[in-house]
Image (cartoon, rainbow, N blue to C red; front, side, top):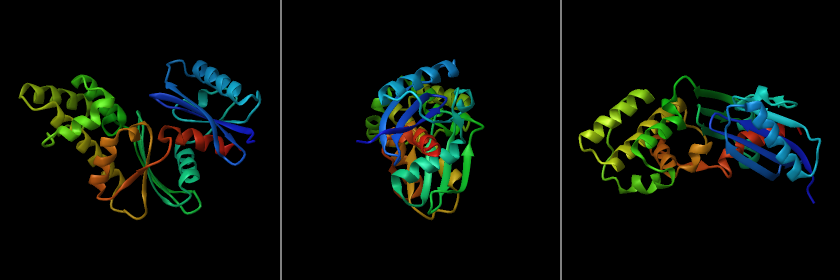
Length: 252
């Protein structure tokens, strides 16, 4: 029977993810919950829960995400390294990882040994992140579970030209007032975000493409990015946990 060997915790802007892995890096347990403003308190509680699930009080802990330095007793690790390591554990080959979270979007080129060959990030503005969709969908009163079906219903994509989340929200309000269909606007939002991701990828399209992060659970977004890149994008298993898995692997 596999024995718990390490814990990884990814304290993101939207959610806090934690995992327990065995000495081979196999996932044993996990926990995901919305992020809380009191990061240190939340991390301590989540770690206590994972230790209880593991049945082991003392395990090495690796922490990543924007709140990684506020996790008591953990070894803080960069997000890029953790996502590359976590992804490589699952895919076991080189490729390009697109990680879309609430706060930033990362494009990481993973080498044949799982090392980070190169990376780019959009972390200066929410327009290229999951927060962009979250804000606009909330304004449109569209539930996350309804997004994919709504996009499929759209006869055309309504262009959303604003590159700022705040301005895009105002633009969407104007489009609704002009009688544009909600489904077309939602499709246009996905296309706009996918175009920004493609710009992060750049012209070097060598290798397979993979996707992680909470936004990877949105099938319409995955399809939009695939269309924008002109090639398939494979969603990794447990896409929200990739950073946490990489953090755990880093302290084995």
